[in-house]
Structure formats: C-alpha cells, structure tokens
Image 1 (spheres, rainbow, N blue to C red):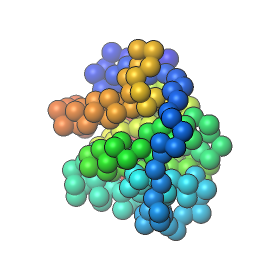
Image 2: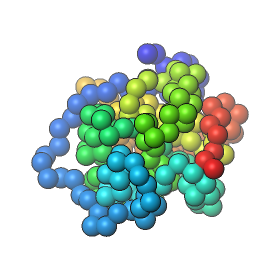
Image 3: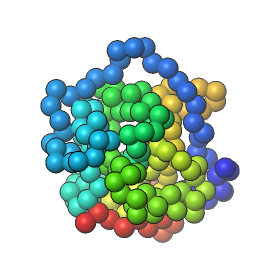
Image 4: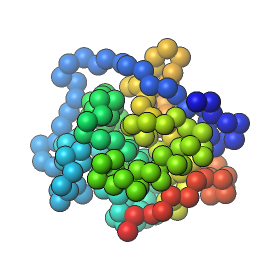
Length: 193
C-alpha cells in the first residue's frame, strides 16, 4: 500500500526479517502486574517482557492522560510469527523497553480476544492508508486519536527501512510537535472502558 500525502500518515514501512543474536532477549522474573489477571495467552507471554504493558482499558488511558504520553498500541496474536519476532527483537530488549516505558504508555491487545477492537483498528489503518496485517503497531494520543503506525518494524535498519527505535522517535516527535494536527486529523478510536 502507498501512504497518502497527509502529514499524519507518513510513509509506513513494509515488514522485513532481521535476525538478532541468540539469547539477547530479556524477560521479567515475575509477570507484569497490569497483565496478571489476563486469560489471554498472548498477553500472558507479553507479561514477562520488560515493557510495562497495559491491557486495553481505562487504566491505560488514565495513565496516558496523567503523564501526557502517547499510547503505543500493539495488536497481535499468539499464532502470529511476525508478532513473536517483533516481541523478541524489540519488546524484549532492555534498551528499547526502557525507551518505551519512559516515553509511552504501552498497550497490548490480543486480536483473538478482542475482535471488535481489532476490527476498529484495522478500519483505522485502512482510512489512514497504513499497511494491514499483524502485528499492528499504532500510536494514539491520550484523547484516542490514532495518528501514526504500521505493521511489523525491524529491530535494525534493513533494506532502506528504519529500525523500530527510529519509528518510536518519529512517533514521539510527532506527538510533541503536531498536537493540533493530531487532534484535528487523527482517527478517533474509542477509549477503553
């Protein structure tokens, strides 16, 4: 798919494979407290990552408003190989997790457990001319405006595509520098209950 000319729908990158050395991932010794009551295998697996994941819901939105941070939303599934790859390459890495925990409120959504939300996010991707498929990586304002995103992002620059850390930096800059445009032009996503 092509990105449109809208400044908020920046060109988004296609997936590519990028290998990391074995054993480079880090897991928590105990599950993330925000995900402890989940029945989702996808969220249970994420609870051991160093990213402070929240489930979709009021707690995440409240935290985003309180801290004035954008939301990094990861929609995926336990059966999705690119989701597992992105978890391993990026979300399990301490330096990336630290950057996310300091600058974003991270929300993990299970595609199979929340199909209505998944459909809304996929519709938002289409409207904003972003690549479709899983994982879906989305950036939202605390008011619920989706303003940037894509699919799988490699951990390192590859074949002319920036690394996920570069994408995180771009999303953060957009949030800080284009708030008016984000609130005006972003796709409205219903906030969690």
